[in-house]
Amino acid sequence: MGNPANTGVQLGHDGQRGTLQHFTHFEYVDAKSLTSIETKQQQLQPVLSHQLGTLVDRVQNTGHKHSLKTLGTNHACVLAYVRLSMSLQTNSEASIVKYGDMREQLIGLRAKMISRLFLTLLLFCGISHATASEVTSYLQEMAQEFVLGQLDIPLDAQAQVQAASIDERLPLSRCEQHLTISFPAKMEVRRNTTVYLKCEEDKPWDLYLPVRVSIQKPYVTVSAPVAKGDILSEGMLTLAYQDQTLIRGDYLSDPTPLIGVRSKRELKPGQPIRLTQVCVVCKGDQVTLSAENSSMQIKTMARALQDGSFGDMIRLVNIRSGKTVQGKVSAVGAVVVTF
Image (cartoon, rainbow, N blue to C red; front, side, top):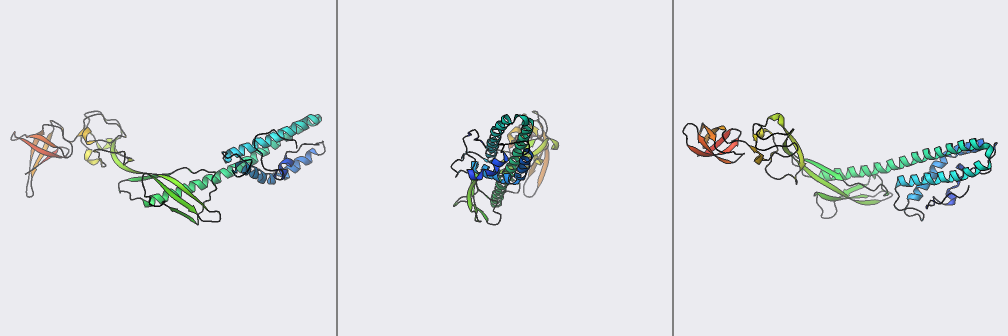
């Protein structure tokens, strides 16, 4: 086998390239041996799979003197395929020129061999990548479950926990039997936290993995845009969730009290409805005015002289007596006076 073009990376050493040399061998081809060469290459196919795995590992292994430290599994597979294809191309071209009367047969054989190289590398690299991906996904899930178990989540809230991605080039195993997960010393769960994973099997490893935690609190919003002055109905209201650190101000987590209130400005879907954006009792509304103490309650009708939301003190005029009084807004169309 002739010397292939230099690609900047040596794939393994000479003792480990023997099978691959046989697989791409074209020298001294004659018509009688053409069929036996192809048969020999088919027999070497299982050995080739192992050899390709070794070559890809050589390219990817940072401890090898000819490796590229920045290459992942996929890049190593591609580089191995290019390297081998160039070797096959170089040697077969020389043979095709030398044995011109067998040109079509040699070109066909070369095409078959390149296809075999591609399919074998595709299978090997696909399995290698899937295995690494499955391991990292499993470890991420275990870290997330651990953090979830440490959270004190309010009954009306939801928790979102997302572990950072793990470099698939790291020599990690699933470690299902002897995997321990903990927080580093003196660390508690917070928005950006870190967990410590340790494997104590035959090939031990440990890893610090960042995890992002978000406590999502419910808030009432509208399901479609609402214009200023519209009265909110049950069908116009819905619940949404947002990180509790991002929700500030006077908002509600229960839509029921907002049924029947009037919007004081345009309301948009996805945005919390603030109590300052609606009037529970609006200026000019006729409301029920309740005068009550610990032993009795008197109700009459009054007209609001100003807007008010839940808990606001507003001025009203008693429709029957014409007197102006102050009361606290308790619900839609209801104001309470304590005496």
